[in-house]
Image (tube, rainbow, N blue to C red):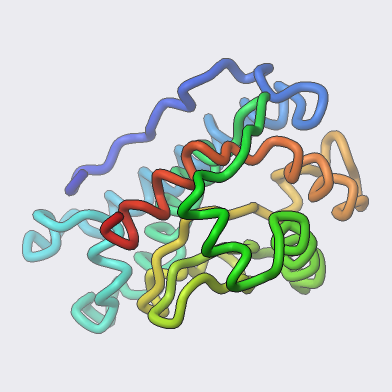
Length: 205
């Protein structure tokens, strides 16, 4: 989707992920925070028509083409827009299991799905301050790491296929300072069907 960007629908009700993620957190997170990133991204791009035909992912992959005057705003709000769009998609009440292709890639990179989720929780849990934990497709295969604030793996030339938000607004109403408990709950909500489809698109499979 090119400019102007629109706040995407969740695809499920605010209470669909309870009790692991409460409805009030989802309502504020989606309706206030994600909406704010969306409107601020549009505002930053308003006077720059050369960027209007590009998707947010394309813009983030080529930040050097973003004018200096708006680069910080695009990095923060474009990252926030893209990161949250993925975040809503990779959660579901049922969870499920990875596709055969993704399971094979996970096995090669990490050993097992449990090893992957443990590494993802460690990366996200150890991020100082606000940020994200990621599973990405990179040139050498799958990688797990974290980024600060709203920085996106697209800025590293990687394609995120799974992401978890560890800004306090993502969990504080329900978990307060218990980030590890929130990450355990997220691990039970991973929508492996979507993550598998993301992997197939990223690898041309």
